Image: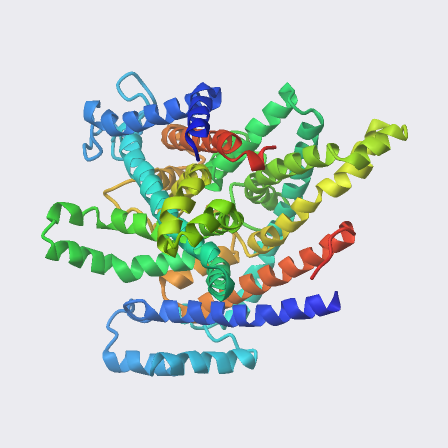
Length: 305
Length: 301
C-alpha cells in the first residue's frame, strides 16, 4: 500500500514537469509578445521588459530560468497585472473559486446520489424515466444556458437572489447551483447504473433472505457498494470544480480564478497561466491519488498494485 | 461481423423506437438549419429598425438589438454548430481509431509509450491546447487558402480551423476505447489465423480489426458530436471560436446573455438558440445511448 502510494507520487512528478513545461512552451510559441498590445512600445523597451521577466533568449534558457524560480517557490510576476505576483493573485482568487466549487461539489454529489438511487430503486417506473430525462437534460444544457435562465427567473423576475457579485451568502447560491447541476446530472446517471448493478448481486439476495427490511438492504448494503464509481469520479470533479469555472464566474461576475486563466492564455501571460496550470494539475493528481486510496477503504475487495 | 449479425443489427436499429425518433428529429433539425435560412424572408445581415421585437407572426422568435430575425440567425448559427460537431467528431474518430488501433495491436513498449502520451495530453488543460492551436494556425490557414486562391473559403478559415482543433483535442477518449477493444480482439483466433497466413500488421488492422470496431466507433461518434458542439459553443462564448459576422449557437447565447438586465427582459433572445441546442444535444445523447445498447451489448445496463 505504502509502496503503491510512493510509486504513484513518483510517477506524477514527470507528468507534472511535462505538463508545466508544455504549457510554458506552448504559450511562448504563440506569435506576438506578451507586451505587444501596449501603445507606443518600441523595440528597446520591449526587449528590456522581456529581459526583466526572463523571457528573452532561447526557449530552453527561458524554460530553465522558469524552472529555477519555480523550484525556489517563486511562481513569477504576472505580465498583465504588473503590480502583483502570481502567488498574490492566486491567494486572492482561489479561495473564492474554491468556496463556490466546494458548495457545488457537495450539491452535485448529494443530487447525484439521491436522484440516482431513487430512480434505481424505482427501476423502469415513471419516476425512473422522469429522473433520467431530467438528468440527460442537465447534461445537455450547458451552464451558459442554465445560468441566464436562472438569472431571468429567480434573480430578475422574482428577485430572490442577487444577479451576481460577491459578498454575502446569498451571492453563492445561484453560481453554486448552476455549477453543480450538470455534474449532479452526470453523477445521478452514474449512480443509477451502479445501484442497479449492486441491487442485482448475491449479497443483496442474502440480506433480503436474512429478513432485513428493504430500507436496510438498500441504504446499508447496496448503497455502500454503489457509491464506488461515484468516488472515482469525484476525484477529477473536485479538481475541476475547485479551480473555478470560467463561464460561471464570468456570468455571475465573481472575482475568481477562472477568468484569470483564460485571459492569461489570451494575453500570453505565461507566468499566470503556468500558476493556474500548476494549481489545477497538482489538485488533479493528488485528488486522483486520494480517491484511489479511499477506494480501498470503502471496498476491501480492491487491491492496489 | 458476419452477414447474419449485420442483418439482425440493422433490423434492430430500424425497429428501435428511440433510434427512429431521435434520428428523424436530427435529420429534421439539419434540414431546418440548412434550408431554413434560404426559405426565410430575412437574412442574418438584414438590419431593421424593429429592435427587440418580441415573438410575433412576422418574427416567430423575435428580433435582436439590430432588428435581425432571431430564428433566421439561430438557423444559420446551427449550420456552423452542426457542421463543427460533425466534422470535428469525424476527425477525432479517424485519429482516435487509428491511434488506439495501432497502440493496442502493436502492444508492448510501443503501446506503453503511446498510452503515456495520451495520459499526458489528458492532463494538459484542453482550453490551452485549443487556444494555442487557434492562435498559431489562424494566420497560416488564411495564408494557405490565399495561395490556393480559394478566396470564397477565406472567410470560413476560422471555422475550418475550429473543425481541426476541436477534432484534434477530442480523440483521446476514442483512442482509449478503441485500444481496449483491440486488446481483446487481438486474442481471437481469426487474428492469429491471419498472422499465420503471413498478412502484414497493416492488412490485419484494416481488413480484420477495423470491421469489428465499427459498432463501438459509431456509438462513440454519436456521443462525441454533442461534446464537440458544446466545446465549440463554449469557445465561442468566450470569444475564441466563431468570429462575427458569422454566428454559432454559442455566440448567439453569449449575445443573449449580455442583454440580460433588470430593466427590460429580452427572454426571446435566449429562447431559440437554447431550444435548438438543447434538442440537438438531447437527441444525440438519446441516440448514442440507444445505439450503445444495440451495438455494444457488453455495456448493457
